[in-house]
Image 1: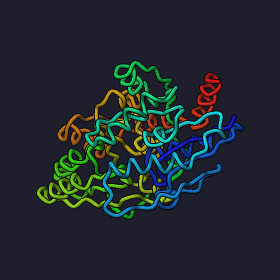
Image 2: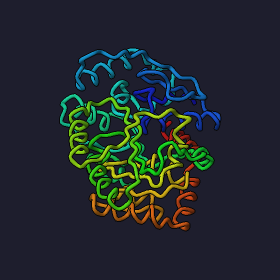
Image 3: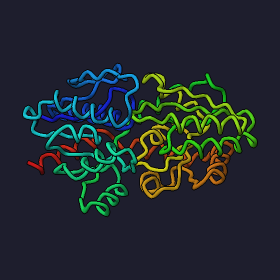
Amino acid sequence: MRIALLTYSTRPRGGVVHTFALAEALAERGADVTIWTLGRGELFRPVGVPIEVVEFPEISGEGVGERIVRSIAVLRKAFTPLAYDVVHAQDCISANAVDRCVRTVHHLDEFTTPELAACHERAIVRPYAHVCVSAAVATEVRAGWGIDPVVIPNGVDAARFAAAVPSRRHGQYLLSVGGIEPRKGSLDLLQAYAKLRDLIPDLRLVVAGGETLFDYRDYRARWEARAASLGVTPEVLGPVPHDELPGLVAGAAAFAFPSTKEGFGLAAMEALAAGVPVVVRDLPVLREVFGAAVGYGTDPSSLVEALVTAIKEPDPARRERGRALAAAHTWDAAARRHLEFYAALR
């Protein structure tokens, strides 16, 4: 079975991390897999399967809508669908770049940019088969479009994070991975941190990640203005090198994940694998995935309460539940279920 996995970037983002890891796990099970992606900078890590990187140079001053349209056109022109038995798109851009594909819907978004809204809609209704990484997102897809996806949870490279040597570079810190953007609940996190610092004065806030196709400069400006008004100075790292991320995660006093929309929560699951206390926003999807292994909050005040408990009164039993939960989500299991799914489509 010849399989093409399509993604939109070479930079670290949840869907890209998923694509690379799934491709390698499929290959280990004997599948003939090739990754196709737009080349947005260098590969964030080496990948153990063939990869076709389609050149996609940056254009100064290009708007988000224009970039979306160009992304789809460039990938469509380069891709050779007849070479594959299964074409599996991992995002709305790659799903729009092909005429027939399987699509993984990692999470659902609401866009106001016309090009993005159209891309999002087409990428749900046009594919002939669908995968979701959680039952909660599958329920949303079913309710919104009458489509019944198969649910195949994410894998996690738990051993990589469990074996990490904790970084001490940042002192005592609260970590968030995913950058500064509306979906990640960044403003709520900032407000929670300001309250948290009053209770734990030496605690720093470190924000990592955030490589994205979209333009969140206005939101980032609001975030920075709010930080100044609160008198706090978070450390914003941007994308962290692949080999340094496990140590950064493992060294955190706690991991904050206040996203307003998620499909699974891979970064939070990696933190559990590292033995770090995790606090997430109380969403149905995160209740489904994490259960009793994490703390929950619905707003800055309740996030603070859960984070104080996580940092000052860490629960060894919860820590072990978290480690076990992360270890149970293997990429090999995800690959096996994908291959079964592909076979049923033929």
